[in-house]
Image 1 (tube, rainbow over the protein chains, first blue to last red):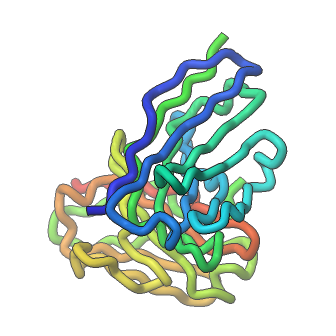
Image 2 (cartoon, helix red, strand yellow):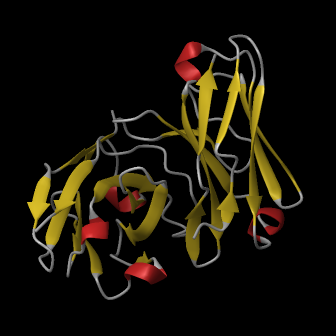
Length: 122
Length: 109
C-alpha cells in the first residue's frame, strides 16, 4: 500500500535550518510529484511547493522563495524539504503529499505523510 | 492571505445536510475545474474527499459531493454523521501556484 513516512519532530533556534524527509513506498516514485504543505498553530493549510519525483523539477510558493529547497533521492524514494533562516512563524506541522506529476499545481493530493512538527524557539 | 474564502464554521444535526462554500477572489475557480476538498481531523493528516470539483476518490462515502457555480465551489455533506466533525479546506489550482481556502470547522450538534 502507498505510504509516506516523515522524519520526527524538530526544535530549532531562530536563524537555523531544518530538513524534513518524506520516504515513499508502495508506488513508482518517479511517476508522481511530492507537494509540501504546512499548518501553523491555529492557522489553515499553506501550500509550500512541489517537486517532481522524476526529474527534480520544482515550483515553490512565492512567499518562501529563497528560503526553501526541495530535493529528492530517487535511489531511496525519499523527498526532502529544507527551510533556512528559520523564524518563529515557521513553527508548524509540515506535511508531504503525493501529487500529480503532469502539472505541479494540480491539488490532487491523494496520500499524505503523518506530519512533522517543527518548533522554532529561542 | 488566502485567495479562497470559506465560512469559518457550519453546523448540523446528525442526518442533516450541510454545504460549505469556497469563493475565489480571482477567476481561478471559475476558469478551471481543478478544485479539491480535504477533511482534516486535528492531529491527523488531511484526507482528500473531492478532486476536480466533483470527483470522489475510492473509499470516500457518496454522501460527500462537490460542485461549482461561477467563482464559488461547494462541498455538501448529506446525512451528516458524528465522524464528519472536522475542519474542511478547499484547494484550487491557480496557475503557477496552488491556494488553500481559509478552512471551515464542521460541528455535528
